[in-house]
Image 1 (cartoon, rainbow, N blue to C red):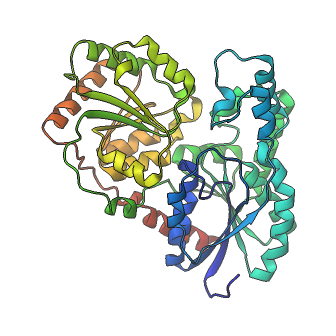
Image 2 (image 1 turned 90 degrees about the vertical axis):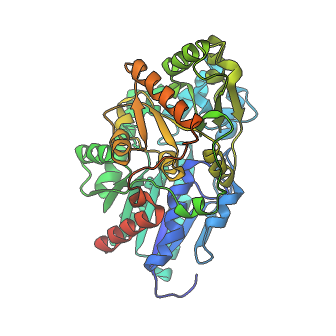
Length: 435
């Protein structure tokens, strides 16, 4: 490692380019801008991770001065693939598939009861041994772990136990025991108690618990976290500066970017659109575009909407630079929240990119959520739930009329505070306060 006067911070993350998807971008962008604040980020990440989304375009965001340490990992996903009968296991598919056979159910049970907190747990011990050997010789006094996968936090916990003088930030992009996906894994009481104990060990030992929303911050405080902070996800203004200027999108396109599984499938929304299409509300101009992982279960559900089904266009995962172009080709950007207890605090990175794209946001979710508050403050869109079908119809007609008039660009309020560079300034202040 190079000798430098910059303060060093070791970031332990499972997701790193060429991994794609939303999970990688939070710390990729922090690492991009930290050097401008006098920090030298060092990345520790698996050498051979088993992820299904790849985006080589994100490699261009890694500054030359950022050192990336890669360490081998073994993951049991070959077991899941064999039990589920799938050659390829895409993100979220372990829990999908309607009625499950014995082997598929066994795979879910194993995931929930043996691999705690997640299948990356086998990386913890060797990673701790390797990192312990390099901390002192490289003057690293600050580490950050980011999850999910929450096994990354176990690395931080064990390092903190070995070297109590370390400054450790545990960053939660999603909750742990309040993460809605856990309830799908058929866990025993013992497994559930194990998750709770590990979570307690992490949040009570970390010098700071960092998360992405005020609601989740309050949840961690109730669980006993001694010091909590919020730094939301954001958008990188640099990603939007090079995009081509476009006029009105050729069609009235409602786009959903990212993964859509059965747990976030808004059947009532499709019913509203089905009725509006049958009434001729959009004059054959409507197109609904799904970009990214669309589960088979969701795709099959459109069989129930014969007028809407021909208007569906599915496209596989796109590199991030191409996604930026898709924003401009859309009239509305669709954001879907899970109908779950923790949805109130869910602020996905995709939401902030939608803000940066300056297109109207149509959100289906919790109208009393952190996300709803930001939408109101920025006037970037609206949130609807299953009780607001009539209001949604008015919103859609107005959006369609705006598109017809060539007014697809959204003049949102002040969104500069959500720029990645500005948020990295917040991280800089946090790091300094902990030294």
